[in-house]
Image 1: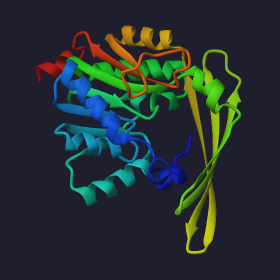
Image 2 (image 1 turned 180 degrees about the horizontal axis):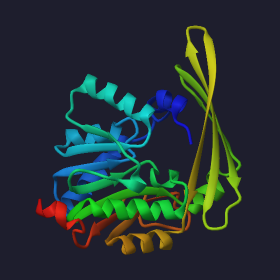
Image 3 (image 1 turned 60 degrees about the vertical axis):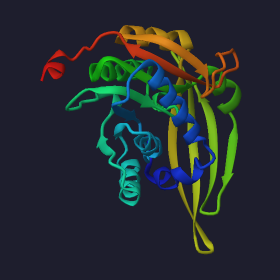
Image 4 (image 1 turned 30 degrees about the horizontal axis):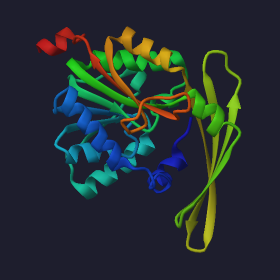
Length: 257
């Protein structure tokens, strides 16, 4: 999976996403079910959600595996001056110096992992670095979205700075729903467009499987929603927002330090 060209254009291509609405939704969940404190933003990308949560008063750590995404995030940090700490981490092998009060993972970050085993590993590593009763809030695209919205479809984004053709193809897998994505990016410099490409993949799992993984990792499910709304999940939900709470802190040595 590559993010080289995609990272440069990510903010432009996602400019129509309601990040603020998602941040407000997450903040309300944390204030209702948890506590405001240290927040880990897994798969933080270029840092948009990290900065929004920092503006709400959280001590934010943004973690991402992509050097290219983090480079953009650090440039944005220098411009806005918000005290977000960015670290390069693979969420399946997450390793931190301390524990956190809440963890978020937005814009289908978990879907971009390679396998159901990786998703389970990410949940277990997340639990290991959580405080007692910490909240884990994340969203994931559903099998319905993969099979009825993404698979076999082509999307075109025409922005002033970049023109993007996004082609999706369904992959043949036995244990999950997978879509392979080919992004052709045409970046504008003056009157000339330069072409670059990136390849990405997403997997999706049934909701019952995700709930079972959360339980095994030590989380109790609080609720799940149809996107960032109060609506219940249905058979045609495209993105589920999950809210779960850790039953008991796992990392005893770190908590006693």
